[in-house]
Image 1: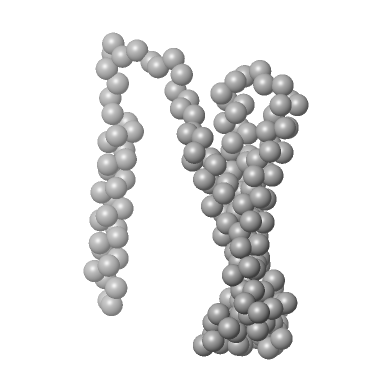
Image 2: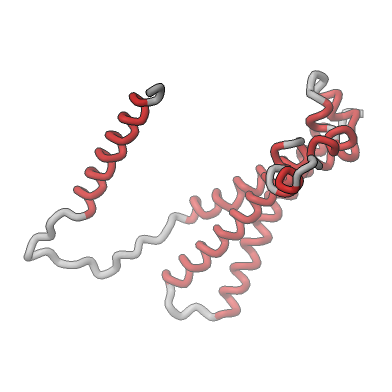
Length: 181
């Protein structure tokens, strides 16, 4: 039983954590307790802005590196002289990425080379940004029950612009970093 101690520790830790959560969640309510008027607590605005901008920066860096490895190979080689060319250069990595099996070509392609990994990172980050826009919209709807649909659509559009602006600025900064010639 090679992993017995770690298994036992993880079981005990999860049981303790579950007991703590249940103790705090299901505490007995006093008979004379007054229920709160509004149990909804809105998210701080800086959390929502940061959760739109941070994934945009990560997605922009990933897309910028893809552009650099496609169009400015010498700049990438200058900045990373010891990088494995079979990993980042799409001219030599396509043989690895397009394996013989269907699963290797479709589901695990992001593990094969830098281009597919950067595409996967950018896709996940942009999807996360759209989820944040949806959560923010629900947050706005809960804050005010009668918000006009036009104002709601305008807010959604402005948030998408903010997310894309962060991505495009980071992409441009990454391309400028590798522009050494």
